[in-house]
Image (cartoon, rainbow, N blue to C red; front, side):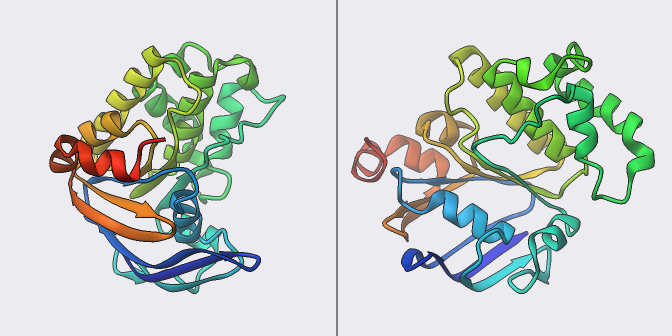
Length: 234
């Protein structure tokens, strides 16, 4: 579904991502691993078209994306949930979900989609009328993911979804990712909780200093503590 070749990205004069290549097949969960500063978030932002300066080939569902802006990639079926969630203060959970359809051209489906999403996210179903920023951190993360899912994306990019969330909700969230995969959503995941991420992934790539240094089946990397310690340990 996603093919990336020769990807490079810069922040000002800093060459953060350097000539990397990877792919995500339809129906997979693929994890990008590596220490802080390895280039994982920059890779997601570049795939989504959010960096001003980048180069390389990005093909999504058979269509070249590297010349398209972020909103066009969204309309192709690519969704992105950033690490900071970007929940809109002053709006309810329901109203934040409605934002997920504003740019989709399917606003007439809003109520039906909220009902459908609420079944997938039972914690949100109980809180639709609640002010969104009053939710716990984990619930806000679920809301950010649910908002992205409102437009029924083919693939979703998730950046550090478990960051700062209590373990009980982390467990619930990773069960949700498995359920999303079963329902047909392809996932590209950046996650510092290596064991948890690999336990639900099909494959993984390890980034170090802007390069892909290792790739393989998730179950093999989960068993390879030497590789984990070399490239992912703090």
